[in-house]
Image 1 (cartoon, helix red, strand yellow):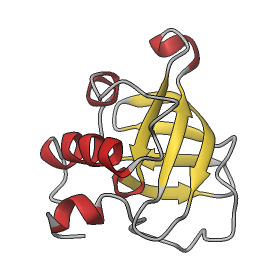
Image 2 (image 1 turned 90 degrees about the vertical axis):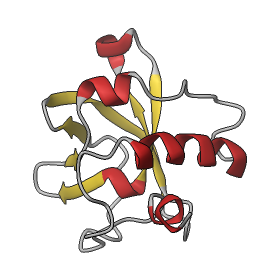
Image 3 (image 1 turned 135 degrees about the horizontal axis):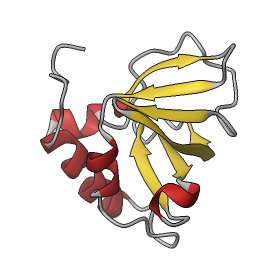
Length: 121
């Protein structure tokens, strides 16, 4: 259960104070889109990524815990998941994405499919 909570917290806050909206998002195997919205709510931080033509214009919700690093100069966010992991994530729900039950579903997906040992970071 602790892992799911950690999934919604940024691992690194050195870029804190910068708006991530508009930043490009890089999965471990390439670009996936741009950030449409970002939250820094304590214990409920996330980014909403507009995938553009990559997944036919869909949006995805990424918990803050999957973000490895942020390059403020290049305006890029690097995440610890592959394109396929992100593509196969629970469908983005515009009406529920701020709801804790929906975040539990998304957090469970990303927490259970980690390509990085999240307990180490």
